[in-house]
Length: 260
Image 1 (cartoon, helix red, strand yellow):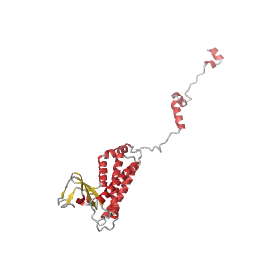
Image 2 (cartoon, helix red, strand yellow):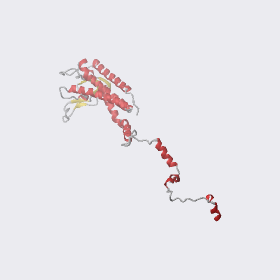
Image 3 (tube, helix red, strand yellow):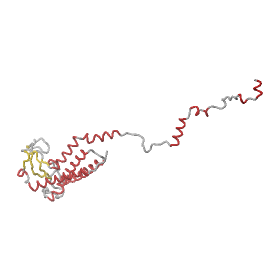
Image 4 (cartoon, helix red, strand yellow):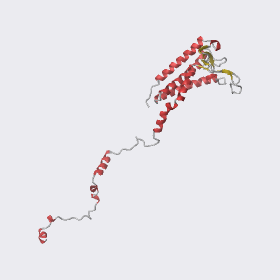
């Protein structure tokens, strides 16, 4: 495969990060939180609804004093790992579809890392009682697909007996979701070619570098031996004692000729 430059894929990442942060800041400055500032976009099922998410996706949290800090650090390392993996895939010549999907996932990871790292300081939205505003910022969510709301049955672990609605998310979450779905739906196309090429390689065999080459002199001598007549090759093998030499009549003495 031909190596590719990751520049254009990182460019998409930067564009999506800018879009995500622009929407979040606009919602923070121009919308009121909760139902008071809710804006209907498409009927009653697609709305803008400003909420703060102190934890992970869909509002899930780590039940520990430093759970938010651990989550922020994890997001930071995940962002670095995804970026490195994107560069590695580009240098290996991976399909463009896979690289675009990874760029979207990276944009989503970076967007939420920015919220967690800086919003507690610059937007002063860290939860009350946080050890430090750094790495404790709350993620701003605003996209509300209102298709269900109500109380969850009591037998459901963790969330049972509480009132919930369809999760509210943001542009960064959407990028991660779309990128993961693309990889899952097209995994055979993204990884199939590489899988076939790996199976086409020989399992074992001689190393071309270590293969011996017949010297030119020996090759010429062997070729000459093959071209010589068989009779000529066997002349030296016939014993001289078994050869009966005949004397031509022209060399006999005159006396012997007259006697005959």
